[in-house]
Amino acid sequence: MGEKSLTDFDAGILITNYIKMEGIIDMSESRIDRIKRMEGILDEANHEIDGFYEALGKFISMQKKIKTLEAYYTGGQWQKDYEYDEKGKLPADLKRGVLSQDAISDLLDRNNEVFEHFKGDI
Image (cartoon, rainbow, N blue to C red; front, top):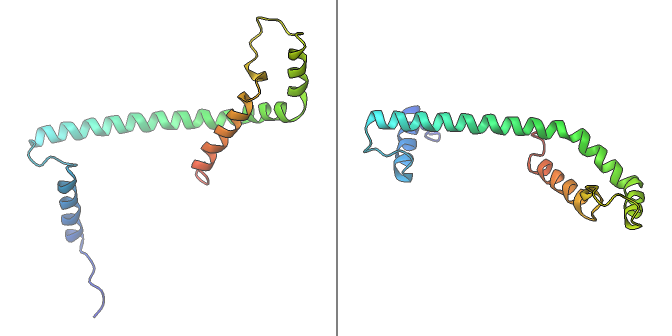
C-alpha cells in the first residue's frame, strides 16, 4: 500500500493541537475575548504591514539618489571636495557630514545589506 496522507480534518487537528501546546490560543478565554484579541492582532498586523510597504516604497524610490551619491563618492569629485575642505576653504558653518571618511561608504554598505536580505524579492 502507499503512504498514508493526512486528511484536511487530521491536519486541522494537528494544527489545533500545536496551537494549544504553544499557547498561541488560550483555550480558556471566552469566545468574545478571543474574537476581540484576534481583531486586535489583525488590526496591528495590517498597520505594520502597511508601514512596511510604505517604507519599502521609499527605500526603492531612494535608490536613484543613492546611485547619485555613489557616483559622487567614487567618481573623484568627493575627493576634490574633501581636499578643499581639508585646506580650510569651505565655510565653517557648512554641514559636511558627506565629506567624512566613512559616511557614504557606510550608507552604501547598509544599502547593499538590505538588498542582500531581500535578494530576489525587490
